[in-house]
Image 1 (cartoon, rainbow, N blue to C red):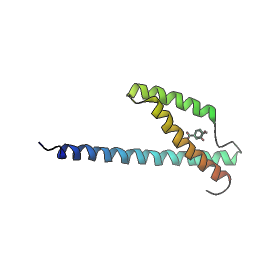
Image 2: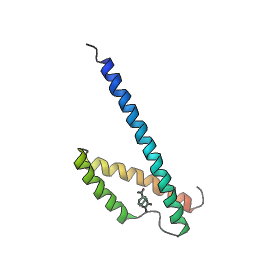
Image 3: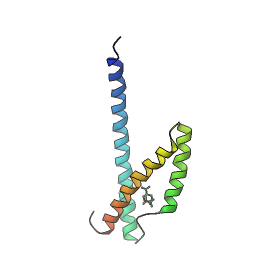
Image 4: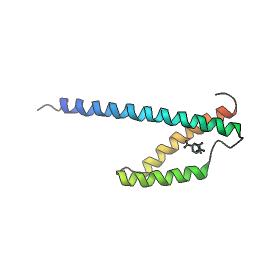
Length: 96
Ligand SMILES: O=C(O)C(=O)C[C@]1(C(=O)O)C=C[C@@H](O)C=C1
């Protein structure tokens, strides 16, 4: 039996998941955009390391519960937050 139909079925589901991830990420960036504006208006620093530490701790726990590698979850959050901070800085400089 050919593996192709099963491969196609799995890939279609993967494509759906990728779309969900992307749309979810876009919604997250809409929220962090509002946080960036609020921070700029109130002269608050773009980064909040204490908040990040709490987020990482929470995501590491959720990862274990979901069978995901906690180190991957931490890297993923750090990657997103670095981009958010870049946006916050641009908003602060009046470029966004
Ligand atoms: O919660 C904040 O203060 C944010 O700016 C959002 C956010 C995030 O993307 O979750 C980004 C930067 C901060 O260092 C912490 C968290």
